[in-house]
Image 1: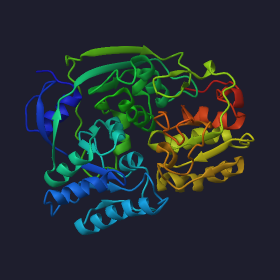
Image 2: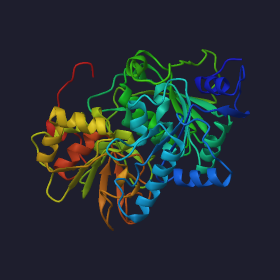
Image 3: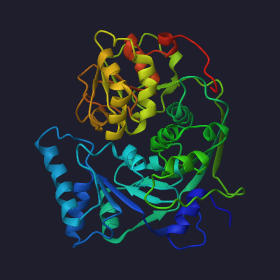
Image 4: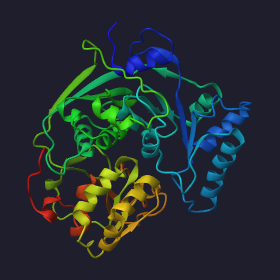
Length: 428
């Protein structure tokens, strides 16, 4: 029977020759991930179930990143639960402040996740790792506890949707814009409990950073996972990085998809999603005189080095507009350090940015940039729900790092060309 890449990975991890949508399978997981919000619950359930030792100390990953560096006593207690459990269990992949990063940027960077893996994480944006050609999805804390005990988890095999993207990206358009455009088309429930598979000449030319941003927001369309078949760009990224050998799966040419969508993105502009849903996306040029109080550049969606370089190319030598707060959060310590080495850090500070150590922070309204009543932010994060970044009467708009940087300079939502001027870029 022909299968999609997602179906092949699930079949391989439950010992079957084939699976089909709707099948219930008990599958072996390669990585089980938790953070400082979700893992304490899983640890409690693990112990209440009689757990003494996790099934594999090298495959349980704990990353305190949401409220760290700890913002208050409660968050400090949450992080301490992870720290103590990691020491007790001998967890090899525990990342403390000073060594950690935002989990969904950190794990690919450190080679913890690999092509062909089956990965679960008690965080919805675990779907990020599909960019490597892994089946990766978010689960609840009790599912994480079960996996910590047994190394297995139940799945209902999802139906697959195929998204084919054609055309060359225009300047300032990125993976973030592709996924905002798709969500704007199909809606926030348009791929509910389905696998979103991305392919086409546009995808073939995307950097790994852009692919990670694209798959990161599959959950914003309600998807079970987002995934891209591994290719040469994948191979180059994982070379010398991965802890385990890559296992490359690909969809059969006659695999069955419940729906197929095709887009020509040649004329696509940078996208901005208005409050209070990611599906409210339209071209940045459609926004006129939308004043902002804060800009956040970072998160598990857009906190990688490529994102920082894009923002830096606009901010260098310019100043943040009066009355605008610019918060820049590198996603990992390696990104932070590389920014310092390359001089990005100094230039951003000179522009008026506050540069933070890695943290999820403002993305979930945690700290380092919470909004007051009536304030409006433009962010490179992934969600703009009511109250997501602070007060329920605040507003969050979503964009890519270039739009965010340009808007920080002008004080209103702006196309990067309005700040740096128009010019062509080779290969774009």
